[in-house]
Length: 384
Ligand code: SF4
Image 1 (cartoon, rainbow, N blue to C red):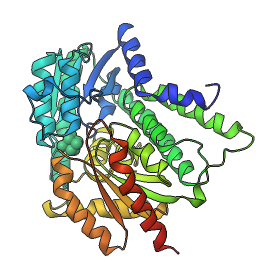
Image 2 (cartoon, rainbow, N blue to C red):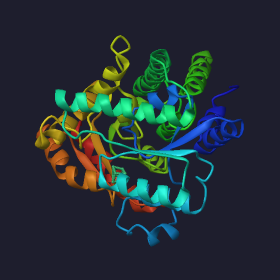
Image 3 (cartoon, protein in one colour):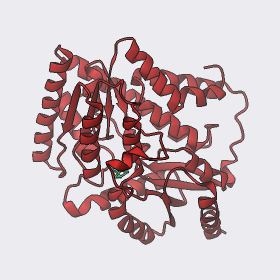
């Protein structure tokens, strides 16, 4: 990587997709993943590339034949891509059965793409020892089906290596967030989003090399670019999948700096590591069910999902000194649609101001600017 300007190119979604396609042409199997809650390490250990499915089609036409317009943008845009035959090259599709939208999307993709391999992972919704036991067996079942497909055994050492590779990538992504929070990363948050989403598209070891190159370039810069972070309002972003970095660009253009998030395309994907010392199946079940960033849908008690998420948000807000929260809510997201009022009310109790922006694609700048500016001024006013 010659300069920071290469960052945009290397980590851009289109570049990552091209790289995955090149690997496929060279003979590597590639599976499309519908959700972030799938223990990808199993796929990686089988020498198959886990490739998170994202839609790029913001003008939805064909998908409306199968999904209603009130369904979330993530599902509709993924389906549009499939109907436009842009996922035809993939060898398989894997989804988790955690929520109805992903289940519906999985069956539609299976019907339309007719991939050689499909698997719907059964993820328990209650965090408990019994749930963990069940999930360990389910991870092993998934591994067995993968082995039948690739025609070879996945050894424990393959899995342990995959866990190490994934953990290294998690640590590097975390480092990127920490540098950004301190104002030591001369990148906009839209570019940071590209870094995270590209990690879901290309082999993790190659992605880690790219991050190390990026960190080298940043460290070699004699004079760090002035980020002006001190004058900006520090914000935490909450939501699920953010498909278009433009919305983060708009928020930062209005005078804020994004310092943390609890997005499925952000910290929820990589914030905590899998225990490398434990039995690998147990460690994966622990991570994806019990220890990892809290999924609103998987809880210790059915009513506690929001509490766990609030605690996670609060700890990030504190760690990164965020002064306010912007919720980016896909207008069709049934998960956040249900959780949002509780999250907002709990933030109020903690005296943390928040703003809700309803996401719809394509992003319209004018639609958001006035509200974001007013919110930033309000947060700034709290401190004078
Ligand atoms: S979490 Fe929300 S945005 Fe993501 S797939 Fe489910 S319904 Fe769609």
